[in-house]
Image (cartoon, rainbow, N blue to C red; front, side, top):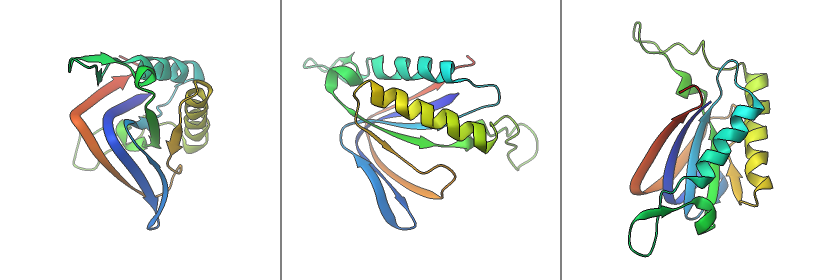
Length: 147
């Protein structure tokens, strides 16, 4: 799995012009599911993300986790994180998981966060979405369970 994690002061997602979800301070996660990914990999990735110390403490040092701050999560499915642009000019997505298994693992990832007591907002799998965010910091981190 691949995740782009952005610390945000707020984020929202629209589908067909209608806002479907929003969060306040927390993390926006763009999640890509690759071939061979498992629920166990997703659980491990979620655990890593919610414990990353990327929020500032009173001294201004990045020393607090999402759990420490009681921040919110927005999790957006994004298969394009598996784009391979090494040849030609049109990206190949052959390493992305097929939609059926990708959606199942995406839903499992979301449920893992909810079981931790975190307020979670989501996008809609395979929908054309407009994601708006205010990146705080900016802080953007890339994680890949294969690396």
